[in-house]
Image (cartoon, rainbow, N blue to C red):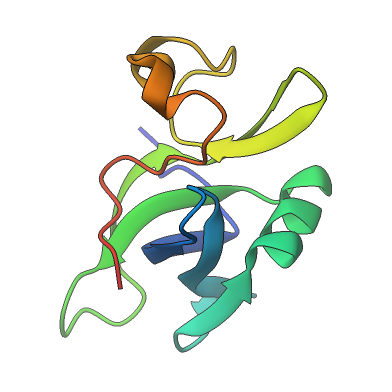
Length: 114
């Protein structure tokens, strides 16, 4: 099976007090290699997702250069005229809205906080 193709790996996330992503720490693909860790704010992340860039949750495997343990893809979900970023299914249902308290929030399951 061929490896999954992706443009960036989200390694860590920081949320605002309102439950939206403030910033993510990522490795971006630069040709056949990956960048050092870089920080992206929410607006930049949303813009790149709208431009069909593929982001996945994951982590770099230590001492293995550009080798990553990757998880779920990030998706931009629209609900009631607002956009949210999630690693849930594309409908925004399921784990993402398991409780009313999680509705209307960004949620990157499996991505540690920094």
